Amino acid sequence: MAGVFFTLQAGLPKAVWILCIVLAVACPTAAEGRSAWQTPGGRRAEQRDWYAANFGSIDALRQAVDEPGLRRIRDEKGAANAVREVKRRHPKLPLHVAVTLVKAL
Image (cartoon, rainbow, N blue to C red):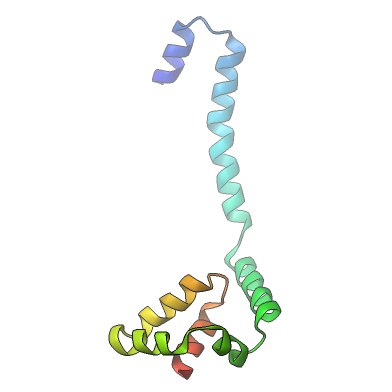
């Protein structure tokens, strides 16, 4: 409301005031719509496709990661931290594949 008050007091045309109100409503609405449009299922499909295109199997993934480093993290800090490390290095990797990799080490 303060923005509306100062806009009216500044002597700006009403078109600028109307544009500000429209943007104040439209921007959050568009962001919510974008967020709702990108469903978790869509992200999972994208992750699966990325994994299939880049690795395709656990064996190929094992060759691409630092196995001794992951084993050390798993043994010292726990399996959850090792999975986090895998996901940090490969953010598009599906979670279940990261868990399977850490269990297979």
